Amino acid sequence: MTQICPFFGLCGGCKHQNLTPTEYRQLKINFVQNILKNNKIEHEIEDFIEIPAHTRRRITLALENGVVGFNAHHSHQIIPVDKCPILTPKLEKLLPELQKISKTIQGVGDLAVLMTELGADITVKTKTQKMNKFRKKSSKKQTEDIDFLEIITQFCQQNKIARFIFNEEILYQICQLDFPANVFMQPSIEGEKTLVDLVLKGCEKSQHVLDLFCGLGTFTKPLANAGKKVLGIDITEPSILSLQKQNISARVQDLFRNPVLSKELNLFDTVVMDPARAGAKAQTEQLANSDVKKIIMVSCNSITFARDCKILLDAGYKIQKLVLVDQFTYSDHIEIVAYLEK
Image (cartoon, rainbow, N blue to C red; front, top):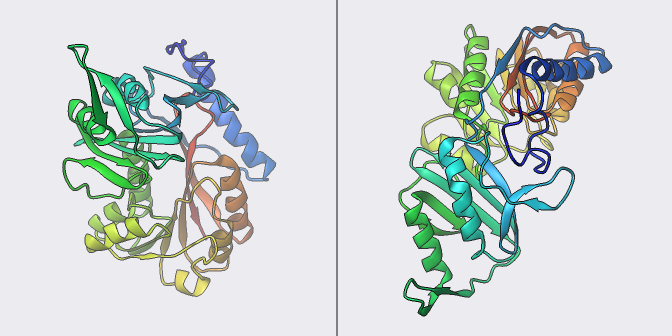
């Protein structure tokens, strides 16, 4: 694997572009194996599924007074980037245009971009709420006063933006998107399909499935489409409302402070759990006290995965399958999918 990005070593996003494919693969496998070993978990990693570069569809850029880019490693310094080999070609092509529009956006904050089939969905959050007026010279070298909204509209029209939200206000939208703004989605379509396929395969013999931390329904919808009786639970109300509008059973619940109790868990033969990086210790403890036959864990944090998995192993569950999905290319992060049965 050769260095393929001019920002490698500056941008904090990628750390391992300088490794060969074999070195890179073994690095990530060893990383997970060491964490499992430290938690007294012994199980062979059955597969390492690689998601190729040029597939990442969403990013969050740091924004500060006209500068937008990725943070340097362990730093608040922003590295402006106009290319990135991780991103989809369409998203990568948008980077220079985001650099230009950042000159118009004042304040300090974040600029999140999700590339959809209809165009980019952009959400900007800054500490500066005020919409100032900006001055721009025309091609005839005449000075015109063009307000913030007009500049954003021109940017969106020229770059085929689907939606542009600035501090919770929709400034531009070409159509009604069927998901909330800045909603969590898997980094790539390819990575999402891989995870969905693994979950569906693990649920082949299941009838009643509980999807915890379901988000927008990455697994809930495919499970429902596969004929499973599925219930999705998540703390994010807009995502749950979106599922309910599609006639999919779902409810809002804070699983960190109010986990599903073992009595209700026993109504399901399989539980799918895909928490955020913090893991799901409280919910896992309830699962450990339940009679659920099968649990499918999906995790983007090896450390919290090992902690939660050990709770289940100590309660009598056994790992049947352990797969790594590398959808965070060149970074330290890795996705883990595990089947556990009691």
